[in-house]
Length: 272
Image (tube, rainbow, N blue to C red; front, side, top):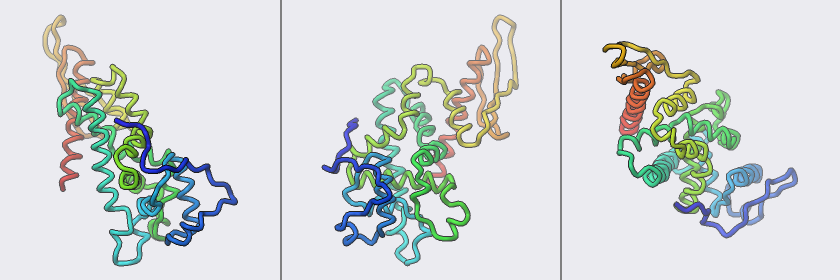
């Protein structure tokens, strides 16, 4: 996949200082006020992408609570979240397809589910400081809207859509590869390719700040040929069981089942 940002001939902007003033042509042709423009230009610098149409960036960071008109869905970021989710899955799926040619559809789906999970999206959105750039209505803002995981994850998906609409597939591939470089780097490690236990640990701990719990529920066979059955518990709920010749193998199989359960539940939620 291409890693070159396209869609603009402009050089990345330097980070605005306190005396920064938005270009006059944008002041005249946009409903975005100067203070908002300065903030958006600051974000462009942080994400290393310059928009041809700055209004796309503005809309991607506009929560529905900030819209007072009846035409809410053409002005807030909800529709862009939908597109961004699909674009992110396309880019990540393409990457996994190329990187792991011997993986089955199920194995690829489990890896993708970890990378595009809300916990990872929220983490990356916080690293970019997206909460400080989202426009909220007074009610949402007063209840801590900028720190809510759902708002942050949705804003990142909408931002992905905005870059895609503005610069095309090459531009968003570059952005996604940079933003999710840590997860991609981990997937490139041989020990991570089939280490379901590590993948489950990272996903669940990032989401709920507590690790999976593995319990031996059955042990059979003589000492030289034992079989262990292990159950993995996530927040007190059983997510899968695995059987192996030793505890490590059984835990890997249980973690694989748990990731499959998580993926299936996510898919069911997406189709509801």
